[in-house]
Image 1 (cartoon, rainbow, N blue to C red):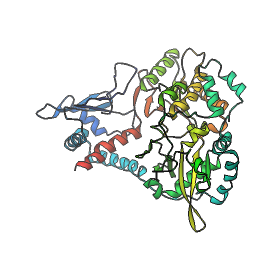
Image 2: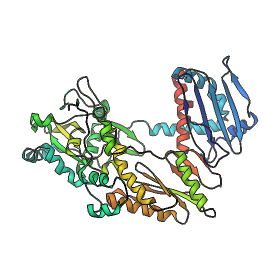
Image 3: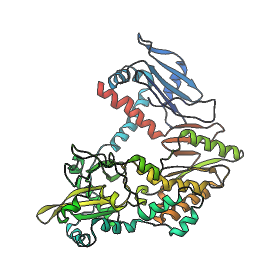
Image 4: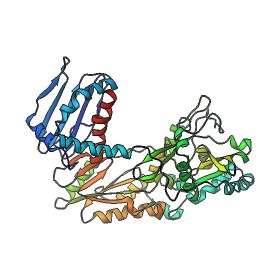
Length: 486
């Protein structure tokens, strides 16, 4: 199931999904406001086929068209069992009939879908600034480890990642009134605490090997790790020079490389869900209850809550244009450090050339990690403080915070100032590096947030998936899935 059609009797439009074990109810709504080149022939066909049953099975499954204003709904209701084979049969039998496109419209959509597919196709291309890991320089780090011990060494190495905003006494004053102010301060000064279940035992590098994607994109994985090392966000040590009792403190997980649109670097992530027959994964070993007592789970905004905020802003300013914008914290999870013990459980082993042989290098993350089961709640302890400061003492909220995204709605004349205020709060708390111009976007009437487009022009506005989101659905439903069953 994907989206329910929007309730046009209310100014608050919602998108919901429904699912049950025995049946599937799928409704997709396309609107002219959410994508400009919506097929006009499909819209006109929908008008003439309003409420017309195009196909019925003996079980009375049906596909219906309805039309209202300048939008159309494709509604597929059926009693098929919700397995992939049944969905494939539905798509094969009905997808061409359902959209009623002209050849020109279909070609246009297919071309755009192909562009999306090409963006998601893995490509490994080396850029001019590819960085490498220099084993000779890493060897010199071992002397300090032998002097301090590995945990004190990691704690010292992480200091450059801590308290990059204002000093503690100013932060405490700045966050006065925020319930979890001391948790934020502790996170910024000491790093994410480690909470593991009693039966967890680090694997010490046993029963783990690198992923297939690491093997294919090893140069790019090393490039990503080298960049983090240069910024002080990863510690690198020669594995063979560590004592056995020090190695036993580390839980090793493989790296995974994936393509990323618009950059040759792709994404390099550590797979903290990797487990073996003898060892738990880092994520499985997390004591979620204890962690959540400190880093409280957040209730993130959804389409409904954003529409509520927009409605209240509009009600408070009936004669003003309402605009929207977003501010994204740069590399949000890297804005907080890890405690030494937590860092030991977020490590990987790399194979690095040195002279005529290959050497094993230990890479230890010193900052928050994407893929950590509680990372969003840990970071959002900070995110909630930004939201609190931006809306404190205001009668009407002007922003919602979705992890690292500040979603801001204001009158057209006040939006830039509201975005400046949000940026100031980020810089004060996390430092100037956490705010970048390219991460700040003023969308005017067409706010884009949490995967949706909010058209704020009218008294009763429209909400729908972003244009690219619709293309991705089209690609999946009408090209990729039918190909599986053809």
